[in-house]
Length: 272
Image (cartoon, rainbow, N blue to C red; front, side, top):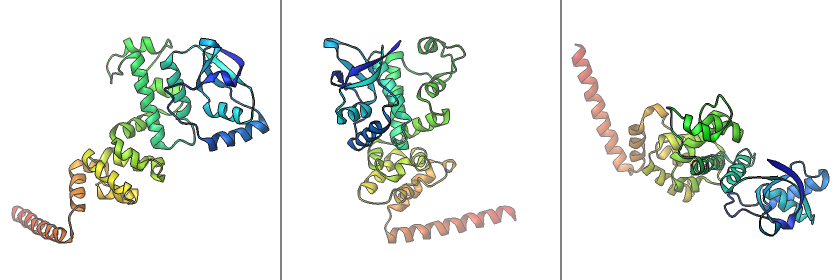
């Protein structure tokens, strides 16, 4: 159940588990918009609890904007939700924000799944999910977690699948190095790191980016620009070659030429 109320801004507290920090720039821009057009979407809170206070679920920037404008009340939807549900609602709202990069959105979606599993139990891949489905939704025709997440978060099934791949396969060190770069919003680049670059080489890529190397150069140096079907062995070979000095590369090229000549000679002998 949800109930619309006008509540005092001073009675709303931020949730301690809130994931996304408030940006003053966004809040100030939003305050300007609210001053001209009013608040279009009310905030979402749960409560009231002790001393009539509420806990914010969604709308931290809207709340901050109202406070910047000196407004003492704000329109709010008051919902019945436990801590898990509140986090799920916040993540679902943030995941579709335009200002989120593809990398940030991926982390939000995986966090949504983690909280979901804390409340409802682990998500199983394939097989009979009827026991979990009974907990997740009363809707008939439910087709599994990804479809459920698609409905609740508001993103396509493919977007959710790609997001999980990016968040789960890219090491935290590399995610941190990529954060804030233009490539953090480039899904193709992120998937190349996730699919093609082995974990040990992701650390090298992170070091290169932190040292000032362009992200795409780090991707090439660690074998990430090899097509996915090229396999991990090709990626490792390219990454190893990138660490050789000039003399070692010349020696490697000489060895490779001799090996190719031998292979061609052997093929010709078999065909004769």
